[in-house]
Image 1 (cartoon, rainbow, N blue to C red):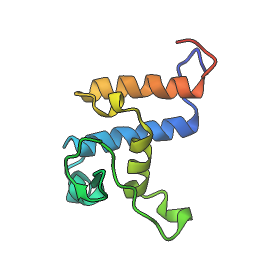
Image 2 (tube, rainbow, N blue to C red; image 1 turned 180 degrees about the vertical axis):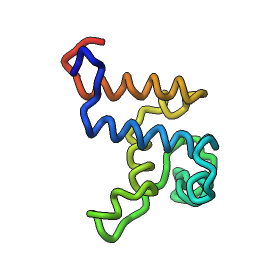
Image 3 (cartoon, rainbow, N blue to C red; image 1 turned 90 degrees about the vertical axis):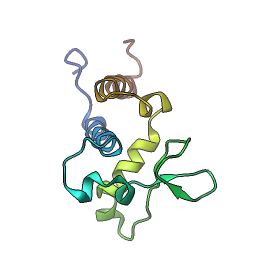
Length: 117
């Protein structure tokens, strides 16, 4: 798998969720209001516990869920959870191409820590 540059399944899922989250935050997500209106789905947290659409910390609010079996799979929970694990240099990427490239490299290093890239 290493020679093919394949990610493990959990990292591949994180990759897909992170790319969709990036698209939502930068306005290039599908046109449906429920996804493209990131102020509703992905509120950004401020250090003092309040919410805003623009924050210097670039972190999203992870809502609490009643049922961890189903609720954790919702994009409103999974998106912020994955996004908040990413390093700031990845989340502040200027283009989708750069974001994808840096994200895949970071996830690949996470999947294969003993291999030098």
